Every structure is written in C-alpha cells, then in structure tokens.
Length: 130
Figure 1 (tube, helix red, strand yellow):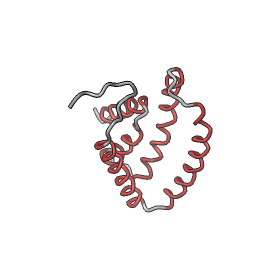
Figure 2 (tube, rainbow, N blue to C red; figure 1 turned 180 degrees about the vertical axis):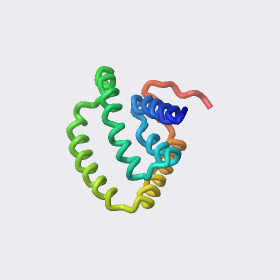
Figure 3 (cartoon, helix red, strand yellow; figure 1 turned 90 degrees about the vertical axis):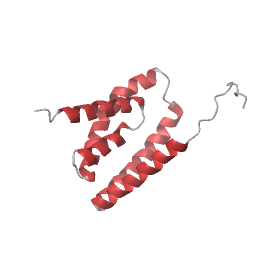
C-alpha cells in the first residue's frame, strides 16, 4: 500500500536539490540503482527525463535572481551538446557493470573533493586572528 512513498520522497528530495543546482539527478541515479533496483542504463534514461521538467521549473528563478552567466551560455550549451552526444554513444556501448563502476568512481572523487575543499575567504572579509 505504501510502495509509492519512498519513490515520492526520493523524487521530492532530489527535486529540491535540483532546484538548488547541486546535482539532484546524480542522487536520483543512486536511489534508482541502489534502492529501486534499476540497471544503470535504465536509471540514466529515467534521470534524463526527470531532468527536463526539474530544470525547467528551476531555471526562471535562477534567471530572475541573476544566477545565470549569459556570456557563458552559448559556449557551455554547444560544448555540452557535443559532449553529451559523445557520452551517450559511449554509454550505450559500455557494459552496464562497467558503466556503474565508472559512475561510482566519479561519485567518490566528487565526494572527496567536496569533503576536503576549502572555501577561499570572501573579498573584504576580515581574517580572524590566530
């Protein structure tokens, strides 16, 4: 009877994170592969369809608040389209287990980077004495 509850919570949590622009889709992939039992290639397809409406919902607020660098849009879109086409072709040619492992290594590297990253002091911020 409550089979829908966990997917709804996972969708809501990753939707909030997507709205913040922090990679909710990557977390959705983790949920789909680790908890929902989908193979990596099917989870990626679901993630791509999930991304379209969530990005569309978040984008107006990011534009309105000045969080989009308009000068970077065209180069980012063009290179992103080319890289996406190449990566999609490569992903369909790879064994699903290898694809899953590559994604796991990618997540580990990103997680370690975030764990040990130090934020530079903001301009004009006073340094506290040591």
